[in-house]
Length: 367
Image (tube, rainbow, N blue to C red; front, side, top):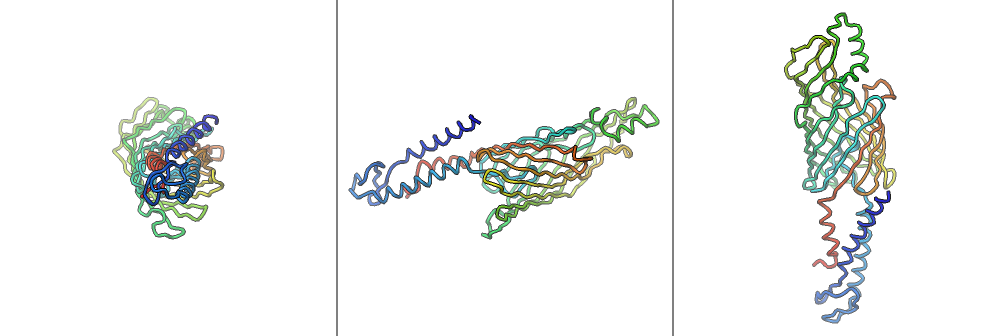
């Protein structure tokens, strides 16, 4: 906390020094540059009262802007996991990381880095988790994404003007998923199969497969005062190949050919401004699920439903934390629910240079 206060104080001090270097008055009659302490123009002798009052107003406005720049907020273009129709500012960078933590199953650490492009699009590199029934936790997959706004905010000038964006996300390469003994022994279906199978040499020992996917989605955001509603549709192309099943004494070498399946899903959520530092967030989405079928001896692809509810708290304009409770439809009870944690860091690499330039040259000095 002390480090945070020191950083905030140092930033305010730096901006104050930058603004203080622009303490000059320009005579409106002859355009002569005068010192701020002078009451009359050093060139034509005209009084500088009006120029000083204009500088004073600009100085006060700049102080208000400085305070807002330091303590204001930058909202990530998503809720917990679902996207919104917003995009990052041009050349601005966002860093996000976190995961879900529970008693029984834990997700891998998931991270995201994104950059805004021209205030209309953004590119993103991230890791996402795979939901399956053969490994303990959710294996992470590297992905890349591109999102572009079709309808930006306030395009039509309406009070409740909607936003619309489309995007595509794809896994970088084939991801290998291998079962572990802890997950198989904890799964009742696998336990019963191994315990009561008539041929002990066919007891299931390990499962492995490779997968990749591409997701296309469209998302709309509707602002209603302190309430913002987000919803969208997804089309997911999932590929599965190289599945092998190892038994205790035998090995099944008849790996099936590559399988492909399209899944149509969706998501929805809303956020409510609770106070200047906190917003409430709720989201529900469909997610793809990989499950090994003991009868068909194949990986089956289907949907599961994920719901998250919680808050986003802003420490500063650039730093916020997301925390809430995650629950999936394939859980057996509330004891399986997990705590969702995420950290959002915003780097205004695009807007900061413009801010510095405007701080050095106040508006009333511009021709």
